Length: 82
Image 1: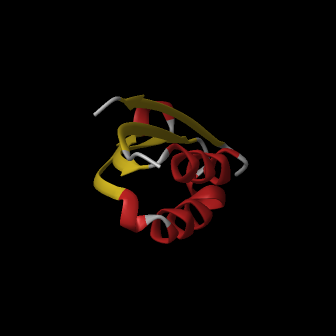
Image 2: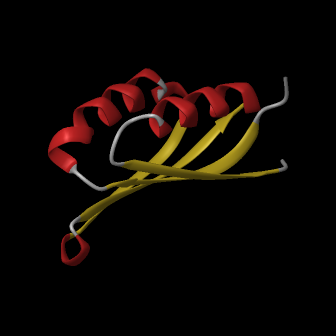
């Protein structure tokens, strides 16, 4: 399959509960992550992670799917054509 680049936004609503599982999955898919930026949004009590990824659509779908089932976590992705 063809690889595509994309951006994945992860919003963590409860860091204490969700962060360990999120970090485990990020490590599991580390080979498709090109860049990562994490920002704590203290006023809203949220943590935001932005990822730049490159992989085929099946890998990206599996990755975002695993993240999306974690309680207190929201995930959105956008893929671009190379």
